[in-house]
Image: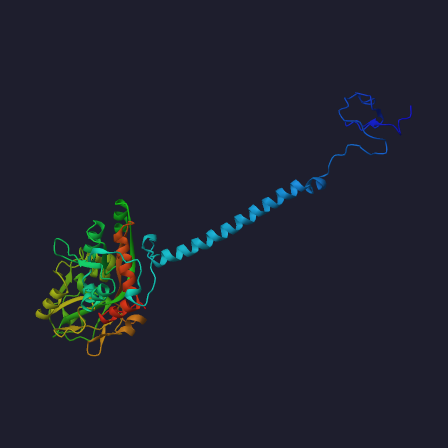
Length: 392
C-alpha cells in the first residue's frame, strides 16, 4: 500500500514515517505513537525538536536575558557607588581622628552671626576650657545676644570650682551643659561613656590656639626646644643652667591634667612621667601670678590670656631638639605670630573645639547654632581679636 501521499504518523522513537493515521503503535519498532497525525510525507507537519539557536531567539528568552543584563549592570553601579562612598567616609574618619561621631554634618559657613538660622529660644548652660573666656571678653556673647535675643547663654562652672576642658566634657556627659568648650579633642573613653548613656558626641574645631611657654622676667635664655620643655615637666631638667640660663632651680607650674588638656597636649603618652615636683595651679590668672612672683618659675598655656602680659617673659620655642627658635608673639608681645602658627614654624599649637551632645534635643540645636555663629565670618573676626588664629 502506497502511503507517500496519505496522512501518516511519524514515530518519535525510530523515525519511521509511514505509519498510517489509524495506527497506535509503530509498524517498525512497535513503540506507542503519541503524536497527532502528520500531514503528508513531504515533511509538512513533521515534529521537529527546536535547536538551541531557536530557543535562544524566542521572545520570552530575549526578555529574560535583557532582564538579567539589567540586574547585573544595576549591581555593578551599586558596587561602584558603595566603593566611592566608603572611600569618602574613610577620608572623613581619618581627618576626624578615627571616630565617625566627631564628623560635623549640620554645619554651614555664614557671613554674620545674625544669618545663622534655626537658633532655639531659651537659656542654655555652657562651660569648659578657660581660654574661651577671651571670646566673651571680646564681645562674642554680646554679638550673639544682639542678633538672637531669645538665645541666652549661661556660663556654668563645675561644683568643685575647677573649670577646664576635661571638666566641661564630664559635665556635658552628665547633662549639666548644653555644649562644652575644649582645648583638646575628645578621647576614646568620652565616646564610650556617651554611648553608654544612649547618645553620641560631636567635636567641631573653631579656632587655633598658640601654646605659650612663659617664665619669670629675670630668666634670660635664647629659647627652649619642645623636647627641653617636656624634660622640664618630666623632671629631667631641673636647673636653668642646663638650658643656657643662670644657676637657678626651675620651679614648674601647670594646670591639673584631670580638669584641663594642657599637660596632655605637651606630654601626650608620657603624661604618666610628669614630675611630682610640678606645682598644680587653678587657672591662668594663678599661673601668671605664681610665675611672676617665683624666681625660676615657668608655666605654659593658651595665648589669649597671656598675650600682652608685662609681668612675665614669653619664651621662643624650637621644634624637637633644634635651636631654630620662633617667638609666639610679635610687636613687643602684643600680637600673636599668626604667620608662624599657620606655616607650622612655631611648633606648639592646638585646635580648640566645641563639643556637642548629639541626642536629638534642643541642647543639640543650641550647640550647633553656637558653632555656626562662631564659624561665621563675624565670629571668626572675634576669634582673632580674642588672641586666637581663625580658621577662615
